[in-house]
Amino acid sequence: MRLTWFCAVWCRRTDELVDGPNADHLSSPELDKWEERLEDIFNGCPYDMLDAALTDTVYKFPIDIKPFRDMIEGMRMDKRKNRYQNFQELYLYCYYVAGTVGLMSVPVMGIAPESSVSAQTIYNSALYLGIGNQLTNILRDVGEDAMRGRVYLPQDELAQFGLCDEDVFSRKVSDGWREFVKVQIARARFYFQQAEEGASQLDRASRWPVWSSLLLYRKILDAIEENDYDNLTKRAYVGRTRKLLMLPLAYSRAMSTPNLAFQY
Image (tube, rainbow, N blue to C red; front, side, top):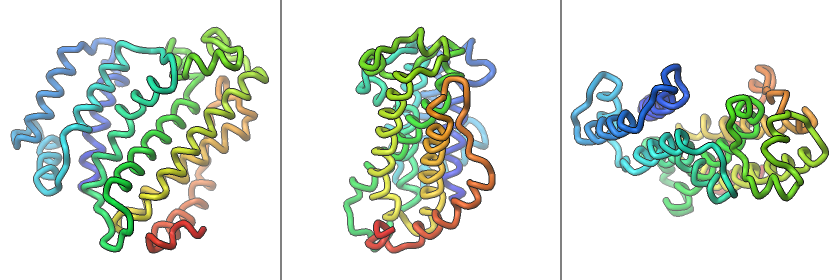
């Protein structure tokens, strides 16, 4: 898991380019330089110690550069775009900024020797976990994003429930808003369900954190429901006690053999 951490550090450094303290001054040429630095990492020419750690990981595992490049493209998208006309557009954004993380991680986490499904199925599951996580982040942070003038929600689906950006900015929780959020929660849960197929097919040592993430993010969706779908003025929160109580279940699922993991 230590080697997976180096991929996570690179993702965090990339994310901070857009969301960090200097994000307002970020320009396209700087992202271009970051992508060139990424290519140097994969070519064995790191710039600093953290780059060197990722270079070592890339050397030891069959990691593809494409998900890393795609994440940088997601940062470019975040700089130029703050509205999404439909779910197809939003899905692409979710892939760029979160689905890519799963694709980066699978080669390092490894696939269980006894796995009964194809490697492509496991990669798809990792992608779906990232999509589900990002959709959950969007639902959790919708009120905070609105204060920054951002609406990471499908515009056409808002309209189907008689809603628009002004309803988001006013932060008024109407019946229409509740029905809209129910649909968005159901979609996120669908992706988590798809992710389960691959979570128990990973190498045994890698499964527990993946299952923990999967179950924790589901708890965030539960918390939104418990807040009566008010994610405009309230931030869904999973307390420490609930997190701790979730860990044994995550461990149980992680330690199950791949063919038995779905009997819970």
